[in-house]
Length: 544
Image 1 (cartoon, rainbow, N blue to C red):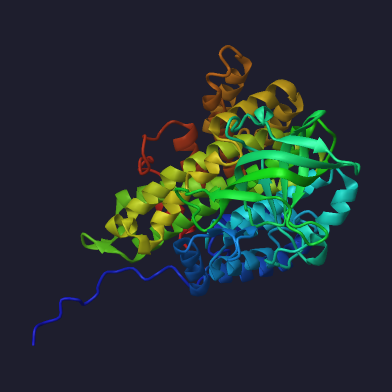
Image 2: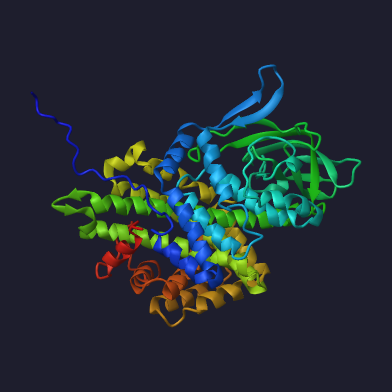
């Protein structure tokens, strides 16, 4: 009998059956740090339950199936009637239902809600990122609707419900609803003031008929949408229900679903309005101001989503290196691999720490924290989302050829990684938004400097970076052309200050030496060899 050639050795067991929350020390410590102690025990139990679900074999299988079986558009039924429906694999509905029931759309109405939701969002989207889009849009619609108390009273209880109801029927008949958003058009893109969709007033006060198109409309299976259109008084925000009160379908013609690089499980669409019934949200001509709070909330979710993806990529890389042996020992114990993993772990922890600080500021709600968010959110959105793709690429490389194979899950993370940098305003939009905050809202810079100043004197490299940043801020010559450089420094100084205050000394030291002190190469794995890299890697290892 011929000897078997298929004995499997030196392969890594799957990272499965673990508590995604408890295994993430940076996230656990952020929750402990920012949440009211009276809420802590309940929150820990809640997040660990979600963490165990997210890390289970079943949910990981759901994520894979939802991406392998992307949504399909059905414009007409068998009889030729226009229906404009999107069919999803059952795994998508299971994932979205779990996300809703976990409270990922109900931050606004409970104590510590934003921090708890942010932690849950980081945990849950590690299993599958696509369902984060409708969860994010539904969560973010609340502050926009609050500009109209009557609309908020009607819709907010449905938006913040923990019940997922996938059926298309009048919102008044549902215990929970989801929202999408439509802002961009073919000719305008990020320049939403160039929108041409027309809003014609109807007889009933506050109601309009919309005619036009949206080049990107998120989550087209949702129950309602916030959209921008040109009313007689200028660009205005509107609520477009998917189904009208009498049970008839609103005119919401889905032209096609976008064939995207990643985010395959989630539907993004082009839609046409033709006499579509809508309700005005806020005053005519103030559409951008009305919807801006929704945009700010979704931008924070872009930061959270990137932090989530980075954490999962780093966890997979360290897990692989823990079990894989090469050249006489574990990869984890090889000095050069340890340098790479530590560098990746620093990027991940800095992203998580910053994201959770922003979520805590939302819960605080004070004038100073609102001013801080005005500058910190676009800066974080710019920088954290841009770091996501290089982290995903390097983490994939840690698995070698195994990481390039679909079954590893790493290609899905890589395809997803650029998304949050593009959605809700790409890099230049965020950089220019930071400049606007600096120029028009001096309180934003004051709040930022007060925040980073809390760590002054603790690390000479951080002190030097703050000084250099102040010098850059004092020089307004050619400010727009160097906006990206400036925003990068704003984000890095903020991350450094948070790590110096909150992270273990080994983490803070390595971050400040590399990101602020200049002792770093142009690729991951170029940290100073004298640092305690083993401790940094061990802290990031996914062991619960």
